[in-house]
Length: 455
Image (cartoon, rainbow, N blue to C red; front, side, top):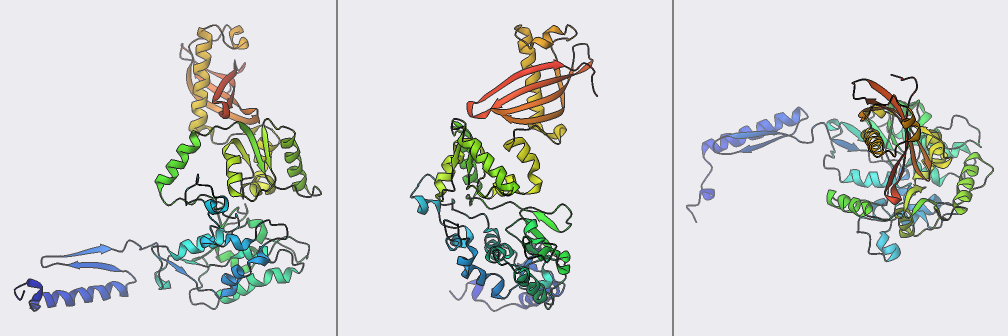
């Protein structure tokens, strides 16, 4: 064993290399840059730190801004909540596993009964495990402020005194300004509610929400929020948390395959409780519920059932899902969802944006042209187009110029399509096609030439 190379005394060369390694490492650290060096008897290899530009520093806030809010979870709950918010704090904010809630083995361990307002807790717990956390704030590209603003607001939502609602936000900025890391633009905060809940611009006690995002210091802070204010420069939209928290891409693909094969006998489903109809939002919700109940063949209504798998089974059997947890807050309440209300709830037509780059719409236009050619060949074409003897066949698809969508007994699309005729000239056609996904049906209803082509 004495002759083994690792038992020999260090040579002068190895000693010099060791000293050189330490010197280079200290030099790298002095430049706020971590350098990984591997020394061999023949050469040294230097690798850049993979976290450079991605380091995050988390402020260690006083517990009143996060932990104390969770411990006060009963106050976060509303009187009409069927499940206490304390239950949703479990599993790092994911809530109870669906299997435990229902004894249902259909869903994998990645499915939880997650509450829509727990985003702040989930994000904080994820950040604690982020691979590029640093305790050296000078290395950080961004600094996370783990204040549970949305849950704190929900805890104080019944307070009539706006000063009490606003107090925590003012205390937060007072604390931040005392920290050496306070640089404004480098800091970011996650809110589990929409921007409107933090933009009360009056001191009227009847006003909704807090003034957190309107405080002077907030203009130098970036907010990750459920829905941003159109006039804001420092808000960035992120989605509500869902029930599904996959740990791998394989889980996602398996779920997608399951959903693709699902039978969906119901056109619409609605899950929610009726609200007082004295407000506009209450009236809309009431009308949706009434229409759903009166159309049992096409719509299923679930009155705020707290069992997670009841909701899941309802939505899995439906083509359109009205109010999955979190979503209808956007679909029926917030101002930016006007198009959703018109196209889904009220059945009105809605323009489809960015048609030129929408692959699905362009393919739908191609389908319409192909179907028209087939019907013309079999003399079963659209009566109006057959009557127009100026139409030359077969037509070649060029592009969809504009498109509108309307919810009927399925999805009806009105497309204006440009085609190339056999003589090389282009011409516009108006096409109507209806898709019923639950029946795996797609049918061309009309294909008529535009009298005066529009280019």
